[in-house]
Image (cartoon, rainbow, N blue to C red; front, side, top):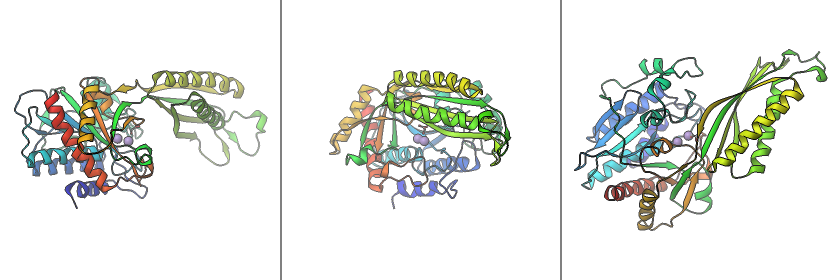
Length: 404
Ligand code: GLV
Ligand code: MN
Ligand code: MN
């Protein structure tokens, strides 16, 4: 088995639960994943560094003392996630650097492979945290103050035993890259359905996430007549179903209620409180805005009809991110040179590239996801496609090195 597949398999065991993988930022498992990566990189002769919020860098020097060309992704996962989302770009980046070193390719720019801290937002309520702080979109103080659902602050988790890696030097000042290329699995069905093995990403969808908190009245499930109820869960359910209708009507956008909390969460008690979280995305920011308008109208109507309180709290807002035309051109050139059709595809999933694109030209390469499955334990990509993606990444780094 190649180093790429072996390492992905090894990482796929780190944080494995019955359902898939669970590696939230600064958990024991996520710390172990970073430790493994640092060890593999050192064994291959690369310099390993981290920054003060847990982003992990490996570096191959170039002929110039210029800003680096970077590639990267993340090692954290959603709850029950798969073994390739994020980990593929991180391990693939290391394998690409090793391939360039083996071939003795002399590059002008230093090349850095980054494992960005906390892309998923699965522990602290903000996605792409490490890359966002790196790019200056979120301040370090804002990140340190974030609190996870387990009650622990980012600052405490960072200082804890699963925070920064011992014995890895901490670099203080981030140096913005001159370019960034992220390799990722598609996480959807489009490449596979079109019989394609590589995708050139055009743009990353914009997204908004909101917390919707509903206050009704708890009561006895057997005694309170339906007409007198103020059931918080049913209000939440009505909002969810109506938002689904709105997303279909507006088109080219997706809306998900992926988190639901009900109190007191007992079969024989009418729910007195409910919290749902909405995630809306589109590569067209206007459609996301229309969805938020729909939500506000809906909240007003449901509040009145059901006599409940409804609060909307924005958690995250990101505009759509077009990727850099010149670097996309570099990916296209490589895909053609490798003998594959050029296929341009938007990304519905968020990626660290969204943040880095704010400070440097950025591009992304996709490989297919079998059955389009991702954020689930059975996420898979064919081994030959995984290898092809790494070849495409290495060649794109060479092409970008000439271009930038
Ligand atoms: C991250 O994977 C996201 O798109 O939510
Ligand atoms: Mn990812
Ligand atoms: Mn993900």
